[in-house]
View 1: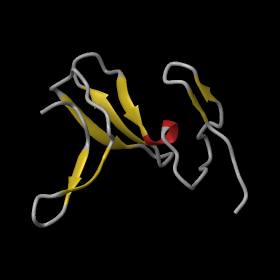
View 2 (view 1 turned 90 degrees about the vertical axis):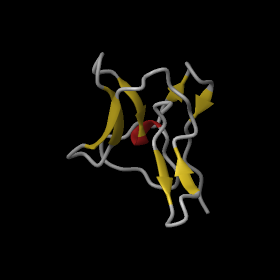
View 3 (view 1 turned 180 degrees about the vertical axis):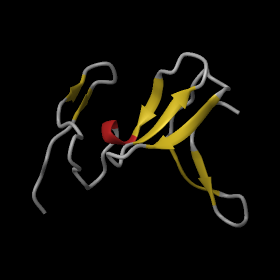
View 4 (view 1 turned 90 degrees about the horizontal axis):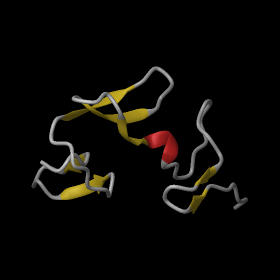
Length: 80
């Protein structure tokens, strides 16, 4: 309902979400050939959320390692 991508378990409990709320109520998720999971606004065609911009512990080809100045995030690599 709020444009956020949410994964539910069999009891309908949230097990993962993009963690952000968007103003779009007409959107869909698309897995691109690059491996980037993107939530797209159906009206504007803009990407609302991208997995390549929200990396966890994996760096994939074509994903970026840069500053996210809009959200004040710094993406860095650290050794274990």
